[in-house]
Structures are given as structure tokens and as C-alpha cells.
Amino acid sequence: MQKNRVLVVDDEADIRELLSMTLGKMGLDVDCAANEFEAVQSMQKHSYDLCLTDMRLPDGDGLKLVEHVMRHHPATPVAVITAHGSAENAVAALKAGAFDYLSKPVALTQLRALVNSALKLPSRKNGESADAPVLLGDSPLMQQTRQMIEKLARSEAPIHISGESGSGKEVAARSIHLKGARREGPFVPVNCGAIPETLMESEFFGYKKGAFTGADRDKDGFFQAASGGTLFLDEVADLPLLMQVKLLRAIQEKKVRKVGATGEENVDVRIISATHRNLADAVRDGKFRQDLYYRLNVIELKMPALREMRGDIPLLARAILARNGNGAGQPAELSPPALAALQDYIFPGNVRELENVLERALALSSGTQIEVDDLRLVPPRVADPATAAHAADLPLQEHLDRVEKERILKALEQTRYNRTAAAKVLGITFRALRYRMERLGINDELDAKS
Image (cartoon, rainbow, N blue to C red; front, side, top):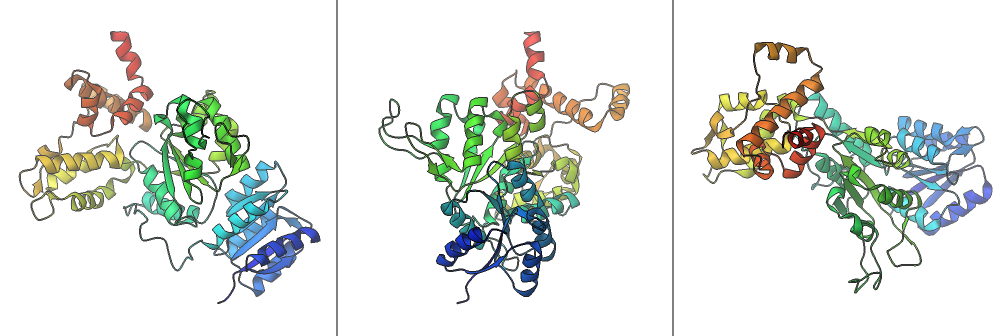
């Protein structure tokens, strides 16, 4: 069986020797280069399964080599070695397409973990795991999103997924995981907004027996549970500032300390985060640490809103109806007027709301065809023609916010301000409704009226 081949690029002979010996003991064939020129020459002669380069080279820098490999040998993952504490270089390399990075002095355990992970990358010919979720849609926006996911899957860079509630952020994160080197490891999703602040440290990092009342055994945290895989931090903007400090250190050092423990333990975890909020605004308002923001937001994946992809609604609707069925022995269909109504609707809850609307319609429809009335869509209210004309002159986001606010207020009125019931009417989760009411200032208005 042919051995995997690695190229080591470093101008210091003793480091080349150390890395070469370590990789050789892992059963790998190793070639060495002392500078960028030699590295480029070697890559013209041989095909490599991994390139490991120092960021400082006598005839250039590792970043230029990363860019060269991405352009001429895109199937070869590149990892860079940076000076201790040089976060800027590491981030620049990851943005350029580097698979991952190591800090000097190189810890051999981390080196072995990185190499093993890189060698597990699926080849571009083999594709990804059959279990990878599919983001449906033929619109240019969705095609671009899928292409970006393919690219991000071939990296270990921290990814931040932004987008509105219901736009598929967790589906995208799971897809990145299952298309990448960690696909055989665990995918651990964590809702940061659902964990009580007093339990956060023990939930994330674990605890030792006797660390506090009720700690009757050692317990691993989310980081340990995700070892060898991906930790997905959903609604990361909800983390309190003290926990942000501890999370930053865990990401930087790749180590965690259990509550009640005296020592740290290495963790091998890829971080993907997401939030429906604007993290840059949270940084500006002092609610999110800037240094953590730069660590998490190395590369951003923006999930498009459903209203930006109205042409994909028929395809999505057919897939949702086929998946759910209606118990009548044949898949339900949308009548032409019902399909037109869906395409005219703004979907503040995005794909998740579309799923909820169609599931409800399946329950309400009497036959195999879903009519407009079965959808129970609540149209946006427009007070009068003058108001409508003014709305057309507003910036798009302001207009959409106004329409969304009107729909939420109408649902609250219909349910006598029962928020759980209003969320069901809107076809969104209670948590999504709570966030939207806060963002649109509805809570303040209701408090002022009471």
C-alpha cells in the first residue's frame, strides 16, 4: 500500500529534522524544503497529501505558499506553523485557505492530531458522507452557499454562520462537518442561550468529582464530547462576558480545565458558531468581546433568507410535502393559487416557517391538494394607499421590519397576547418570536402601554 506523502517547508534544519522524524514514525513519506522556491519545485515533481510550512521563509512567507498551493494544487491541504502568540498570521493563513495552523513551540501531540485530521479529508472525487444534509435550491444564492460549504469543509478554520432564524444555520454547520475531515467524529450542537449562566463552565468544560455539591462523579463537558469532531455553538451572542473569556482561552490554547481540576487537558475540536444577531454590532455595544469575535469569525458564511430565493419555494415545498406525507397514500400537492400565495409571502421565519406552514396545511387539508385557506397565511396589514406608497420608498430592511412587526402584533392581538399561541399562529418557535419582539422593539411598546 502506498504511503501518504508530506512536504515540510522550514528554513531551520533542526525543525525540519524533528518534523521529518515525527512524521516518519507515523508511517509517512516526508520530503523537506528550506524555502518557498524549493517547495514549489517539489510540488511540481510530486503529489502531496499535506504541506506543512513555516510562516517565515527566507525568500517569502508561508502565506504566499498557501496561496500558491490553493491556486495550483487545490487538493493538497496546507498547514502553517506560526510564532507563539501570532494570531494575526494564523487568521490570515486560514482566510487564504490553510487547513489549520500550529503555534511554536510545536506540541507533537497537536501535530499528530492535525496530520491525522488532514489525511482524513475526502478526496474531491470521492465526495462527502452520504449522510450530509442537503440544502435544496437552484437559485444563484443557494448555489453560492453550497459552493462555500464545500470550500469550508476542506479547512479547520473557525466558521461563523450568520443569518436569520430558520434560515438553516445548523443544517449548514452539520453539512460542513460531514463533508470534512472530521465527518467520522461527533457533531455536538449547543444552544448557548439555553444554558443557565451558573452552569456554563461545568457544561462546556466538565467537572471533577467533588468540585461542588452534587458532583458525585467526573463528568465531561461539551468540548470533551466533541473531541475529534465539531462543536457547534448556536446563538453564541448569548454567552455572558465571563464565559466568553474562558471560551477564548480554550480556543487559543486548545486546552480546557475541568471545574475542580488542577491541570488542563488537550482538546481536538473544530469550532463552528452561529447567531441570528449581528456580532459586529454586539462588539460595538460592549456585549461581545472583540478578541473572541475575531477568533470565531475567521470566515463568515451568510445564510440567505427565503424571501431572497422565492424561486426555490416550489422545490422546497415539494420536498417538504414528500417528506411529511398526509397519510392518504399519495403525496399532497399545492394548488396553483396556494403555490402563488407561498411565493408572495415574506416568510419572516424562513425555511423553518415554510415547514411549519406546510405541516399545518397537511393536517387541515381534506384531500391530497392543499388550498390557499389550508395555509393560514396572515397577510401584512397596510393602513391605506398613502401608507403603502410611503412604504415603497423605505429602505428594504426597514420595510421588511415594518411588515414583520405588523404581523407579530396582529398575531398577538388574535391570541390575546399569549406569546406561545402567537408563535404557533406565525409558524415560528417561541424562542424565535421572543428574539424578534426584542429586535423590533415590540416589548418596549407593550410595556409602555401596560
